[in-house]
Amino acid sequence: MLSSPRLCRHCDDKLEPNPVLQFSANATLLIIGQAPGLAAHQSGIAFNDPSGRRLRQWLGITNGCFYDPQQVAIVPMGFCYPGKGKSGDNPPDPRCAPRWHHQLLEQMSQLKLTILLGQHAQRHYLQGFSTTTAAVQQWQQHLAVGVMPLPHPSPRNNIWLKRNPWFEQQLLPPLQQAVAAALG
Image (cartoon, rainbow, N blue to C red; front, side):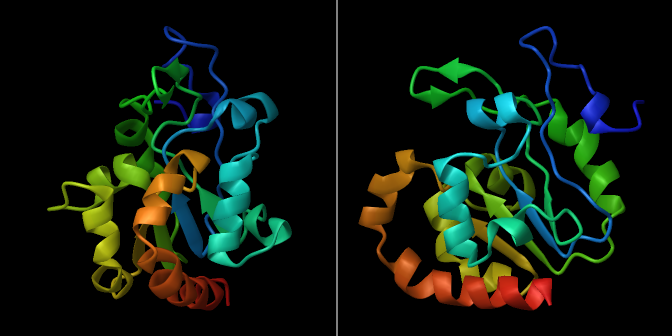
């Protein structure tokens, strides 16, 4: 087994591997997203796009804090850009999370809050929710155990945000408080 997902080449049968993650055993906030987009793949920087700007606004943190691996770990469900699909990017490579997540999470003893972005992370880590909306609507139940499911911050989800105004009104203030508490 390889010692680091940064060295992983398991998806080279599909695309040019460029694992994108941010990790430190000392991080107190963990973001588990889907897979890097094209901009992140090209730059090697997670959430280096409009989704990242929106996510940082939702979390109420600066770029400096977000990109400090001693505070924030970013571990996607798929570490490499999965390529373009019919209606956006393809889903994350299903081999990544089973191969790497346990090994990485085992090292993170300081975690206080885990953010699960989008359906792929939520289906992997939460039980009993058929949709992202259903998981996010139960945010108080999840936050009580240090987990916060969120929709993916992609501009593609603007329609979801318009249909669910409670998300920004009711969920974002407690989310920002929880993030501030996790970051100390």
